[in-house]
Amino acid sequence: MARTPGQELVLIERVCSGETQLFYELICPYERRVYVAAASVLQNEADAEDAAQDAFLKAFVQLYSFRRESKFSTWLIQIAVNEARTKRRKNHSFLYDSIDEKDEDDAGDYCPKDFADWRDTPSEYLQRAELRTALRNAIASLVPSYREVFVMRDIQNLSIAETAEVLQISQALVKTRLLRARLKVRDALAPGLDGAWNSGDGSWRQVRPW
Amino acid sequence: MNTVEISCVEVWRELSNYIDEAVEPALRQRMEAHFNTCKHCAAVLDGTRNVIRLVGDGRVFDIPAGFGERLKASLARKLGG
Image 1 (cartoon, rainbow over the protein chains, first blue to last red):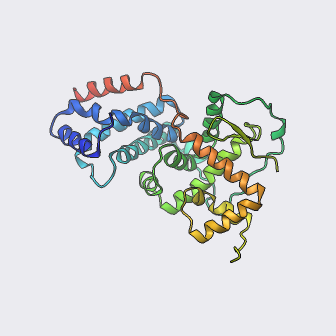
Image 2: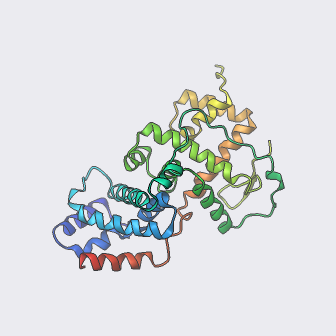
Image 3: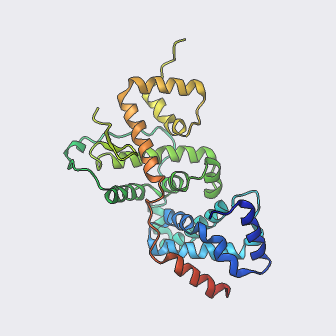
């Protein structure tokens, strides 16, 4: 049964008061979200798991400093992002940062792309698992700064303000990167889906060509 | 009252805010009028919305098998719980 924010605060206070055995109970509902936050930065399952574990340990150590004006989940996600970024820097040093961390230019307009060859892809319906793989690949193809915003906003369902807080960037930059990330994922997916989009109710709808 | 036309580029620029229902009513009205007449932009809107709907179901990223057990064991070891 989902607990209320009030019950969560009581749990936090009890852990801070020495009932450390309750910590797992406290963080258990957020396992997935913390892992996904780390995975959005690291793109590697084992590294993301390590970073998520480190994030939970850090959260335990810093629990006394948790400020009640933030959501506990947002606070945890922010720690996970920071841990993952630290790990990324350690793992890949300047070489990784100089190539992968280099952001695309946030200025200027992004124009959706038309894929001339999309009609040539096989026309059978994609199964759900295939669709997920296509989505994962599309998300993985984003530069890190866009991927992080996309994951926080559209997968973790954080607000624009929370996304900005977690990633420590301005809300304006969140909006710019989110727009580009959404359009890029759509662009990346369109040829794979042969022009048909899942309309969300089990049916497929042709939205192209034009 | 006539709706002031809006270009495709301006529509793309505000598409994300439109989806998030974060545009002013007047702009929203102009964009809606544009979507009604521009197949290109209507397709971009539909596709982008579908992407958001698909990733929002929370199943795009699989959590590794045994993650919870390993986390619990790690915390018990390090916190002595």
